[in-house]
Length: 164
Image (cartoon, rainbow, N blue to C red; front, side, top):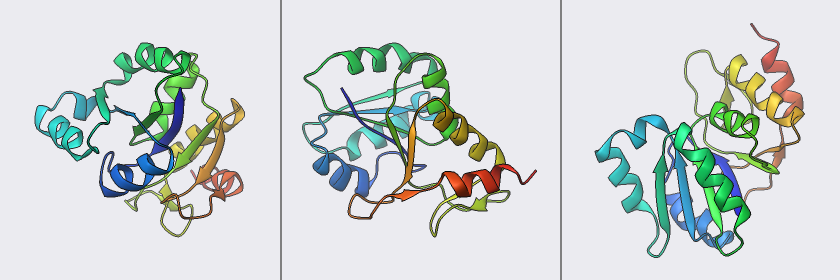
């Protein structure tokens, strides 16, 4: 069962390894990122940062759909899916994967990104991808750590998407 879907540019790191996995009793982590999946050093770093006992898979976007569909249909696992960008999740949903909720975590400032919340930024294209996900029935919330209250972001995304 897909327990948590999260955007986090850092993929597996302290907050994911300690807080998110504990709060949701995660047994599997699926990292969906073409660059990391094709770089053995980055792949090993992410796998080794995961908590002991957690199964970690690092997959390309193309490889991820059949694996996640299988995870979604099986009950015994609690899976965290993490990717760096909203486009990955849009690809998965448009391929047929059902995602109820997407937690938008770390999307840091960079050129071309507009402020979404205190710590989150998105380009107009990323805002459009998130809005498409929302239109496809995916609830969107901003939440850096599980202790934070989740924040509605759709109204701000609409403003950012209009900046072109």
